[in-house]
Length: 191
Image 1 (cartoon, rainbow, N blue to C red):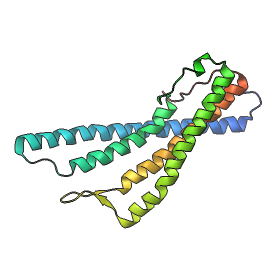
Image 2 (image 1 turned 180 degrees about the vertical axis):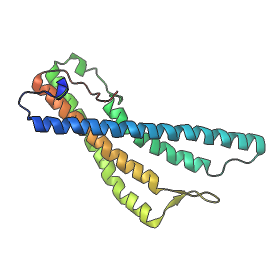
Image 3 (image 1 turned 90 degrees about the vertical axis):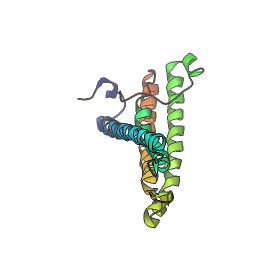
Image 4 (image 1 turned 30 degrees about the vertical axis):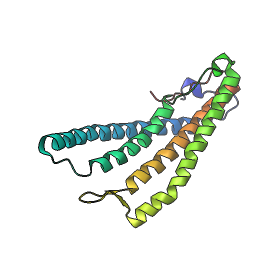
């Protein structure tokens, strides 16, 4: 019923099943958000090209392009963060860990994952109040013809941070399992 990495001695089958389901669900969400971020980046390409053509060819740029692009870059980064974490795409320095045996390497991996979870958890916690404030007040960025609401950016930071925290917690659990079994820790789940 479970893939081979999820058959672990000393860990109950329901706990393994919950972990397996959480990894599958989070992987699916991460891939969906990656596709959404890719579509947004693709659309931004057209906006920037239209702005350049309008500015250079007709002396009339697309209004609001700087605000839309700056907001969209933040949204894209937070939408892609969970996938980057789950796929092992986050930067890591392996100078010390490469010379360690599997158990200490896995334990250091667990500590690193918990620190990542703490970082994104604090970002998420700090963004709740800003999101609520921007949502209720209807805050906008930009002046003139186009004003871009700020709440979608705040929401993407909040959701992206919560999902990244969950991803790091799942990886920390995987690292602890690897340490218990004396196996090397693999940080990637989704490819």
